[in-house]
Length: 438
Ligand SMILES: Cc1ncc(COP(=O)(O)O)c(C=O)c1O
Image (tube, rainbow, N blue to C red; front, top):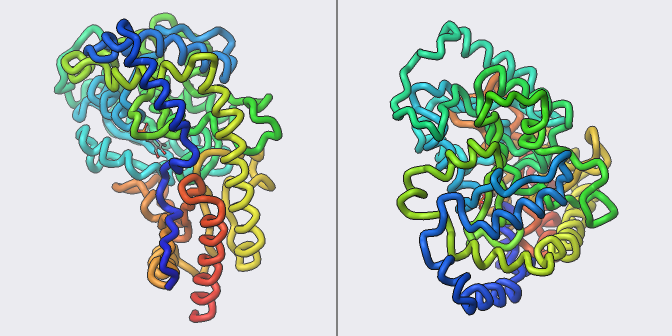
């Protein structure tokens, strides 16, 4: 067995890709300025550091180019997407009143426990995706079936949480990663996005949209946002047949700096209607403990000076990610393609050749199983792979998704390019051996 371990499961950014020198300077600048450091070392406003909210609003307005610029009131600062998911559930759901959580499947596996901690154990349901993202038709059937089974009676299960003017309790939660999903890399089409927002409105659902990979697109020849950029679900909810009665809307965008400057920063943002964002900032732990990651917010804000962060993404991160993706995708095609292995995102296939994010999602030939391959890859080749069954929603799918046992997730942003290529070589050896042993 080779002595050096290659880990294609770890979904972290490689420290080599992070702007460490700039973070050091940003920390020095923030702490050397009395006014900024006083802000940073205090509890901060509930919605988070205002200069950072303003900079994020300006940056997102440039990147997504929505029909109207995004005001800072639509943004609050979070401690990252995971911490914020927990706060969203604390404020806007109730384990008795909220009926179910619908997740795109395969799903980002580490969210399962966040939902379970919020009281949804046994009420998570997977909805399959195809090349255009979550299957909204299947979700509609499932929502209708559940709503019918309680007679459409919203009083079923009185909320256990106190009514508060700053929140509403939704009847359903829908969780998805519409752009460069984890683990499949799939991007949801514009039509699906619109249909999903309409469906959420019809069934009183809050869509939690993890938009953590949106900036990391590898396929366009330019490093700048693709011409045909897709609106986020939160952008659609803002403009589609707007209903001024609806203060809270039906989508919250969960953004994060984790995959851009380092997960240890624990800074992210949420975007939604002003009502929803204010409500989120009123979560008990924020009211008591202050804005999440307040000091780090002041440091991250320094990275917006002279537009350093957007330039870092376009000039450094995107070329780096594109190089890594291209290297691993072409090695997979040439080494594993002849063995019957296919994968997404694949620039040659799909409804719009969108490639980006951190992951490649492999489909093994029918005669091989992912649990056997991942076990043998570790034992024989010191190679760590993500077994597709990890991404199955606990509690079941609608309908049963039976191909995850043939899938593997590979991350190409952790190991360096040489190790990525070695990893694919090792995987080829394992697959050839297992196919011979059949
Ligand atoms: C879809 C998705 N959401 C959230 C996260 C975690 O985000 P954060 O570090 O901001 O908590 C990840 C990290 O892998 C992810 O893939």
